[in-house]
Amino acid sequence: MVDEIWINRAISKTGSLAPNTVFLLKDLFTGVEWDKLSPGDKRDFGRQFKSLVNRGAVPNVVFLGKAQNNSSRYRKVIR
Image (cartoon, rainbow, N blue to C red; front, top):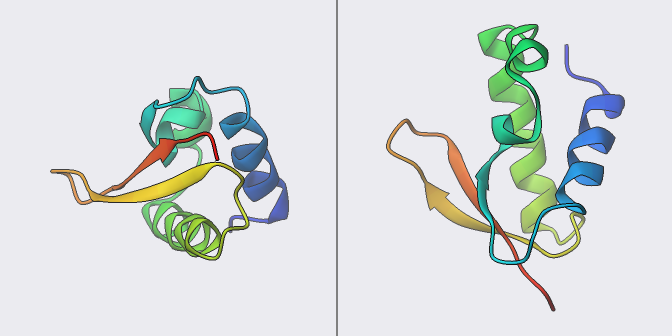
């Protein structure tokens, strides 16, 4: 299960991205870290993160839409 620690780490990592960077949630973690999550946990994590982005709880990040693999795409912006 994805907990608040994962969410906080993801939000923190978005702060170090360069402006206009387009990314997927999994891009914020190493492959080894990401692979520790089950497919269901990855989906739940993605839904939680997207919800936070859409509510404005993740500073300077906007939802762009879906990538070809159905993952959500985001962009780091400066407001």
